[in-house]
Image (cartoon, rainbow, N blue to C red; front, side, top):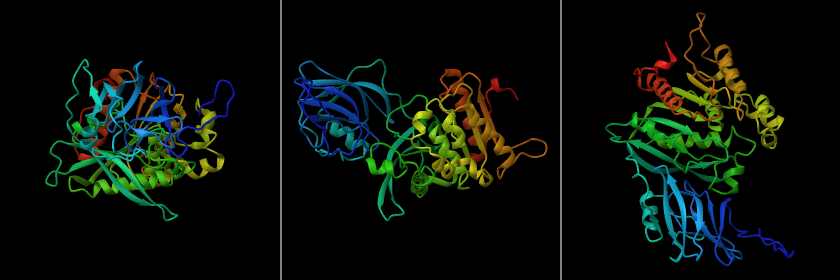
Length: 410
């Protein structure tokens, strides 16, 4: 909205646009704005006039941030990344006519076409290093889901495939569920990086289920207050679509996620036995316990009502869990307090379908970081994280043994 400083009538900008605007940058003259919004696995730059019903999409490929407009309005500078490359600086020519993707931003999702569409407008600036060489390839896939009311919805995902994955050499599949939950897989992260898993031979599926951004308000509402319904069925449908490919080995699959993705990993564990192993990091387990103890209790109180918590809490289904789980938690995590991980671990050992044996041995594992928070940020700890996760997955999915980091002892 804009409001005149002399008290005029407020005016809504782009009232017909069904996306959530992020960064805003004024163009000279203050009659137009540049903005960034999530859009189907990207976060493009859009241009909108104060009287426009919808903005025009300026860029196609990648997720943009830190947009700054030149004083004369002829160009903008920004940072851009995607799951194909980390952050890089770019120059956006604002004099070039808007792309043919349509004013609503409904452009092609094919990476090559997106890059080609950007060539006339976006120039890569010189940086300190070249893009890293990836150990595989990235594809954009989608599948149709029919909701209980009969509505058909498209669920899209990224699929990162290792070099050599083919019908003759199908790759094991790792489903990686994003956190948030109001979020999208669209920007490179050095912390949650699928290419580490691809380098180890796994195909990594990155789905955007209900509650993901970049698909409109209806797509969000499908999962709002009902986390165990549409988000779960969307993720399973995306997994089905990936497993139907000839270059994927559907007999060797695992799932993992952190934060809300960890919540969903816990929910998946209690509702299907299709996976060989599940990794759950900093995860929500008992929603009645989580809501009042997180550092953002005021936020979650708007969605995790008592009724919602009772219906959607993974801990209620612990008896159905028959998949080996690796639980990971940091003691200084105040977003999802350590009590969630401790309770999950205890109930896996005492109440799950894979309880601890009389001698105390168990198929489940617990990786505990005394000095880390919601994220594992220390570089050496991050290495331990990946090494333990891959050792857990390799043993159960591939049937191979990988040495654990020596810092963990025996």
